[in-house]
Structure formats: structure tokens, C-alpha cells
Amino acid sequence: MIHLCASYACLKLSTSLEDLVRNVYAHFSRYSKRFKNFEEFQTFCGTPVHKFLCLSRTRWLSVESVVNRVLEQWSPLHLCFTDDVESKCDPSNAAKSILQSLHNVFQKAVLEFMFPAEKDKFLQHYVSNRCSIASPLKSRSDEAFKRNSV
Image 1 (spheres, one colour):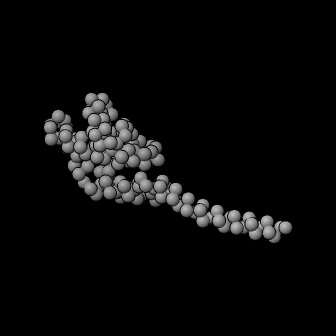
Image 2 (cartoon, rainbow, N blue to C red):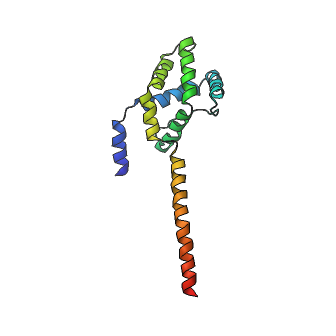
Image 3 (tube, one colour):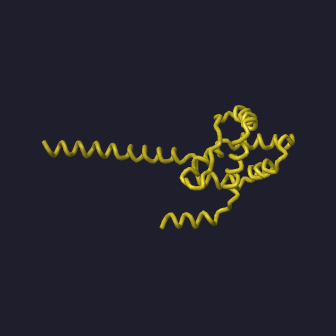
């Protein structure tokens, strides 16, 4: 039932986010020269040099890693496509379409909302605070047990 609810909710979302992720992957996947050019932008921005991941139609759990990779590379992508469109070295309309999507602040906000990168830090903070609260209680209960057993 949860899967059906999630599937129905996803049908209501805009497909432009999925199109952006797929177009970015397709733009770099078959052209090593494009990716070499993009690596220069990655090193300029100080982001890790990573390739883009393919968004699978059947493995929907991989969406998070694909989106996180695009969010990680957002600044170099923006610079790279701006350079491509302004210098007209990429005559395809795909580069213009990707650049328009990257200019859309709403799309980045939705991606960050759907897949927050800080969730691991949040979970670690929650677990560490919970453990720090639980450990004094545990030590007190151990001391009380020892006193009562003697």
C-alpha cells in the first residue's frame, strides 16, 4: 500500500527534475571530450572528480545517489553549461535546456528537499544525543542494581 501511495504521489511531481538528471547523464556519458572539459570545472570549483550516475527505470532506490551526485556537482555543471552555451561550442539544444534547468532555483530546492545531503549528519547527531542521554541513565541503573544486590 505504501508503494502504491508513493507511486501515485510521484506521478503528481514534475518530470523536469527527472529530465534534468537524465539529460546531464546523457550529455557526458558517451563523450569523453565533454567529460574531460567538465573535469576542469570540477577542479576549479574544488568538487570531487566524479562521473554521473545513470538513473535506472527499474531500480528506483538508486534515485537518491543519482540526485546527490547532481547536487554535489551543481556549481561545476552551471559553469560548464554556461561556458558551452556562451561559447557556442555545443550547438545542441540539450545544453541550452540543461542550462535553463540549472538556472531554475526551484528545481534545486526541490532536489535538496527530496534528498537532503545533511540527513546523515542529522541521524548521527540524533543517535549521539540519544546515546549520551541513555548512558548516564544506564550507569545509574547499574549502580542501583549493584547496591540492591549486595
